[in-house]
Image (cartoon, rainbow, N blue to C red; front, top):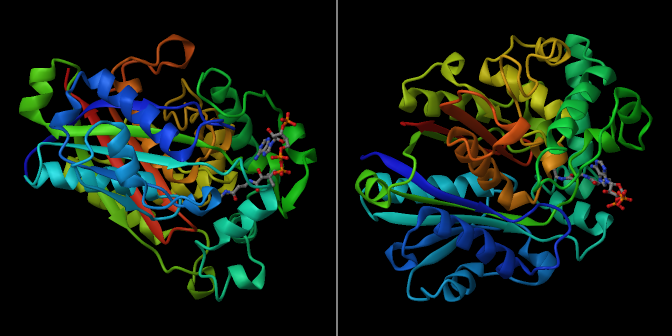
Length: 386
Ligand SMILES: CC(C)(COP(=O)(O)OP(=O)(O)OC[C@H]1O[C@@H](n2cnc3c(N)ncnc32)[C@H](O)[C@@H]1OP(=O)(O)O)[C@@H](O)C(=O)NCCC(=O)NCCS
């Protein structure tokens, strides 16, 4: 294994976009190529993350993206791991470079669901559950995460206000993110009185359905140095899973996949979680951010809510979480999300975020991307070297 570096990232705005899947993916990829200053001909292939191409009747996106980038002869395969598709594609690009199979690889994630209504989208999303035991019985993802929330409340006394504070923080951060989907300041009361989606989760506890794309280019140390940009090393990657269906699990308040993937990534990076300066966590529903904090060891079981309440996870708190606005407010274009998190890590580490949203003095960032209710989990650690 050799070291690998991120040399460029790109992202479309997240939200309702007029562009097609292919166009969004290409826009994000071109931004990454431009930022890296790399000749697209040096890219030896791509992994294109996409989970819901059926919403646009488009599969096999890889060759379309490569054709538009002017490198149709380069291989590109679709990666699908539900909402963890983006970070999974990033990992495959990393593995190709770190393993010596290629010197430069593109990872791009893209989703487009605005062409279908919310009920149809909820039905399509449910195909990522264990459809026989969950989806076909009427359990959508809001319902499955509500089940996790209820278990957490019963075991630890977590309240609806505790969940609401996660949404308030992430909406506040998204207000400053020009690429965020939801730009709306909200209060705990707003969350509590918003429409119930699946008890105890309400509309403001949920991520929106978003379109969008994000991309990253991974390359060798030699090429990164030659390109002359900031040196941001892929310090660790972890990829794991959990029992696919909630009914099979003995504990609904924790995701095994997060613990395993985080342990892999931190071991590779030779870091403890306390050495990480900031985090982008998978907050598809507010409860998910609390569970992720506890599984990563940022808080003891049942204690994450207190950290949020005390402001420790705020943008300029001790443990900044989701300074981007997270899935909750930056938006959740399913297969783009993991790469959107990598985009945020890179831009924070290199100081490109700027302004009030720029985290001060951050060198090491960790992102956590969950597919479904944890059947797929990917953890990525990036570290700046200059
Ligand atoms: C919460 C939810 C049901 C709302 O859907 P909806 O009622 O069809 O809402 P619409 O898309 O019609 O939007 C209506 C308004 O609410 C806003 N909105 C939609 N979802 C929102 C959310 N999650 N949080 C805050 N505002 C939201 C829209 O921006 C829109 O505002 P506007 O009228 O000012 O433009 C839907 O966003 C949802 O199911 N989210 C979860 C998605 C999901 O499960 N993803 C997979 C995770 S594993």
